Length: 93
Image 1 (cartoon, rainbow, N blue to C red):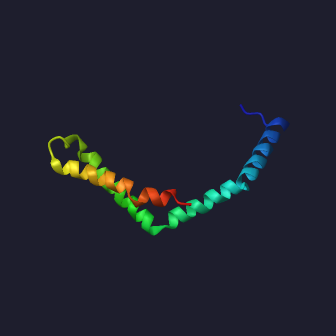
Image 2: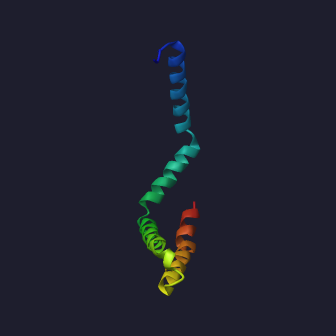
Image 3: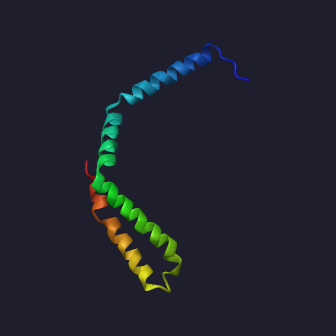
């Protein structure tokens, strides 16, 4: 059974102060701006979606890679796309 006393209230208040302080840090604001930019970049989101679909297709077929050359080509496409603009664009800013 939880007993609410002065110590528990003090801990709760300290947690609220700490969270409030943390949310005001410039690093947190910088993170929020970068995340918003990342989420609002339609081209990047489309590239990430296309990459994920390609990777999922490869993952579903990779057990047959030794028997199907088209799966090897799918793997090459995944690796090419992985090295492509997505990595560059995500590392900017």
